[in-house]
Length: 184
Image 1: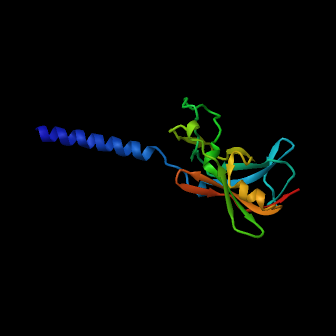
Image 2: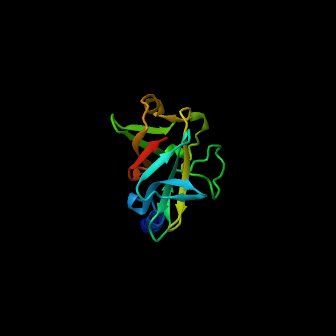
Image 3: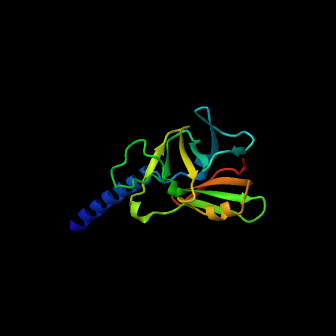
């Protein structure tokens, strides 16, 4: 009789475990999102139709857009609360999860990413749900004091290059197309 009770309890436990495991979706795949670099113009974020961007401002501003292209909400990895507080709606996506790949006309590619600051990091890295057709936008100002890889970029006197955004979505990478950038 004791073995039957154990078997029943184990079956209930395994059934509950499987139900929980399959009811919590994991991170979305790259096919679930569109990543692009937008131009901010007249209060709007616009996707450059010809993938050409002219920048006259320093530090270099890039607006990385991550859009859910599916018909249901998707999880996007990378909302970090630096002070360890409870996350609230509207918390920005953390720039620690984005990098920019820069390809000068001559030379090799340069990966530019946020400098890590261990003192400000939380161990919590939850997902955020993004509704169908909704977008998250990160404004990135490529300041050499805050971004790694810019020293190589700045020393070379580059004025024309290709760039794409790379977002680390909890193990899978989301890539934007390449954009032709001209610095004025």
